[in-house]
Image (cartoon, rainbow, N blue to C red; front, top):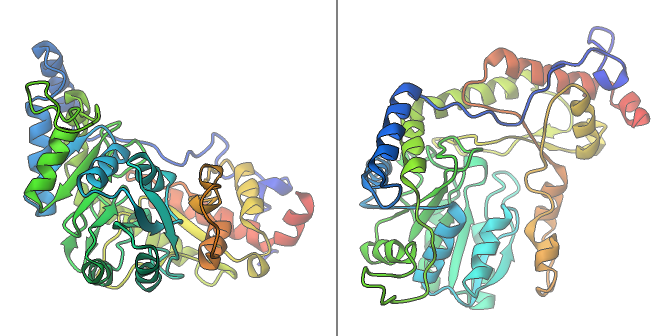
Length: 394
């Protein structure tokens, strides 16, 4: 193998991407129509609380099969509004293997994060450990994250929430376009909250969407995104300025178009990468259950250093020499971050720690070609084939 493969760039070979390959690259469809819409919004002088936001909410509700969607300024503010609405001011059980905003939302509404383990294969929240933590802590709510767009075990998590009598809130930041056994992510639990930030499959530039079947919850979030003001400035509760602008809603509407086709293409590219690297020692991937669809918001590797020959940091360094950007999503896990150092450390999270130490996310865009995917895979293969020399060079 080492005699037929080209030298890795870190050992003097030619970089796979001399101009660099960024982690994400946004492409907005229907740009001419979008420009016309933006011009009309600007000409109207109405930049918020307008018809475009309502159109986005209706389009998303139809796509997700839910009666209520509330557009907000970000996924984080959406989570904050949902947690406020359900009264999650005590302990809240959630995974530590998630983006920090999941825990931040809990902290901002006066809750206390209680961290639970993840499943080793899917790397989403482990329902059994979540049940234990909900019971032990007397949690006011249960939160889970569809990591990288991989659907959680929503059925078992629903059972956990119902047995405990607590609301189930999903950080669905990565999941707009994912499906669980044919049913859209966004239609589960008490509420699911999506992100429309630039790294997502559907983007508004910034923004978020709250999806729920609960009319009362939706109404509370609509009031909450506008300071809790019912219209007469006699605020009913302390809300936020979490409105989505008309401009962001216009971009999100354009991005929402043909999302199913983009998700399907991302799945094809990830499967092509998996096939190209099949059999490579020390490399595995998060498992998406049969019958489920992931957005593959991220193409993430799980690297076993002893078998692969390099750890995650070394592999990232070698790929940087190839011009390939990468991120350690999510390292450190939230329970090891400085922001939560004051929380009790009365239990260990060995699976979370192990996975967080080993993950590396590589570039993936909805309009990336399979040829580029193959080049990325080839670069990983070249580096692994000469892992001993690479390790010595670092």
